[in-house]
Image (cartoon, rainbow, N blue to C red; front, side):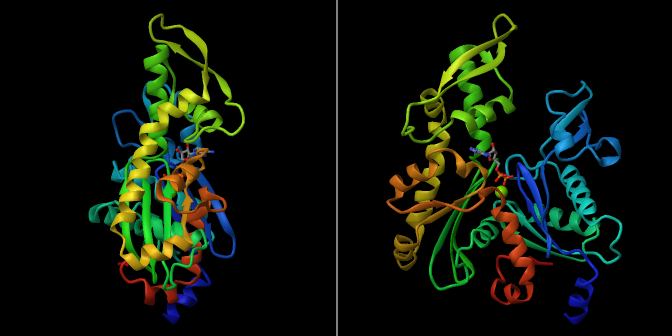
Amino acid sequence: MIFDSLMGAFSLDMGIDLGTCNTLVYVKDRGIVLNEPSVVAVAKGTNRVLRNGDAVGLVAKEMIGHTPENIEAIRPLKNGVISDFEITEAMLSYFIRRVQGRKHFVGPRVVIAVPSGITGVEKRAVFDSAERAGARRVYLLGEPMAAAIGAGLPVSEPTASMIVDVGGGTTEIAIISLAGISQSRSVRVAGDDFDAAIVGHLKRNYNMAIGDSMAEKIKIQVGSAAPFAESEPTMEVRGRDMISGLPRKTTITAGEIREALQDPVRQIIEAVTQTLEKAPAELSADLVDNGITMAGGSSQLRGLTLVLSNATGLTVKLADDPLTCVVRGTGVYLENLEMWKETMESDADEH
Ligand SMILES: Nc1ncnc2c1ncn2[C@@H]1O[C@H](COP(=O)(O)OP(=O)(O)O)[C@@H](O)[C@H]1O
Ligand SMILES: [Mg+2]
């Protein structure tokens, strides 16, 4: 232990949010030093990462839709499962090395927040890739626990906290008390499904093909889960006419986009109410006072907190800076490793 903390002085300990959309890295005493899309460019049909492995993150994301035929931009964690181990490993080690630079001669201690639904084999793969990328010690932390810590919830106290983290590929729900997870659920419905619902809507109702990034723009600009208080905005959308094959534009309204989003929104709400139904009575009682806290990029969908509050009868608030909650949580965890290790046996798998 003394050896470890001595080593810490020479290494760059880091906390990583390995998200399905975005990967963020926090370094002790420095804060968030990296925030990039979880995207890797590969030679089409292969696992070969392009350009000596530096076509990762933003560089790779910008290639989407603009790539020559033989290049493909991949999101290796897209559905909250690791669809491709080799590419995930290439991405993780690229990010770790980039943050570490060449100056540090001692491997870092790394805390990685992973979707809580991943299997033992997938955990092992994340763990091994961090080690191969030079980590001296690796700790895996469940994403909802990391989000709750990052949101400043009193996770180690004898009262219940509830966190709902709506990301890109998954929604992670947990009720936490005394530093342990009492109830949790990970469902594969989140921001990507909002985008897909918008793509489907434009296809069905306008015979118009749009790309994922246009769908995301529509979602952020006029998407909602509850009606707007003021008048409902409209938006001009560009895409390709599916019959003539030619470029075309059309105007959509916030109301129709809300209707298109209804189904995935309902699935998220149901997952939350089902988790609440399973909670022990004492914890339910705590939640009457403590309410629900939301984190993750997609928790920012307009009206989502309101809809969730109506469905559960609880107060629902958005964490500060919901996109960085998880990585800030890994940072807090990292700074208090010794303390957490005693209290959080089950959630932080130390290997
Ligand atoms: N203002 C916003 N309104 C709705 N969705 C948003 C907004 N900003 C970002 N998002 C969505 O948040 C998701 C990414 O959130 P993030 O928490 O980084 O996901 P992950 O943890 O899975 O990597 C994407 O689907 C993105 O479109
Ligand atoms: Mg996340």
